[in-house]
Every structure is written in structure tokens, then in C-alpha cells.
Image (cartoon, rainbow, N blue to C red):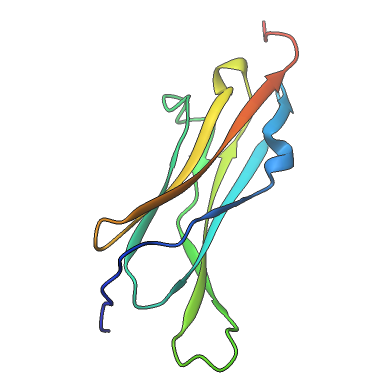
Length: 122
């Protein structure tokens, strides 16, 4: 596969942002996705406030599927990566960022603030 030179990288999008206001104890799944040509190599990762909670917060592997782009000869994929937070706590409140870095070092990201409501867990 031939890797293409890039001057910029596509901006990722975040689904399920209506879930960014959650109650203590909720499970939250946030989906990050980007459409990109198949010949662009990149990394997609999450940055979030409570990174020490390995037993409650999980990042999925990056998955992809073909996207119909009409008459273009270039194969386009929709890449996705989920972040799942089980049993949300006030420590999970803060900025959640999905970041893309391509093979030429170009970056782009999308961020949303998650607010956690409710009583402190005892």
C-alpha cells in the first residue's frame, strides 16, 4: 500500500455527546469517528481527566468500515474508537478529547466537557 503525503488530517467527530451530562453511577459510552482515505496511516486516542481508573474506564480498539464516496477511486473508511466509563463518579468530570495524529505528524481533535451530577458515592 502506498502511503500518501498529507498537509492536514481530518477533524474527528464525537457521537453520544448528549451523554456528556451524567449522573453518578451511570455507564457512559462516547464514540469518536473520522472518515479518511485508506492509504493514510494514523493513531486515534482518547485523553480524559481520570486516567487512573483502569478497572472502570475502557478504550476500544480502533475499528473501520468502508464508506461509499460515489465515483472516487480512492477507498474511504470510517474509523471509530469508543470510550466506556462504568459507574461514573465526580472524578470523571472534565474535558474529553479524541485526538488524531497522522503519519506526517499532523494533528486534529474534538473535545467536549462531561458534567457529573448527583450525590457523592459513599
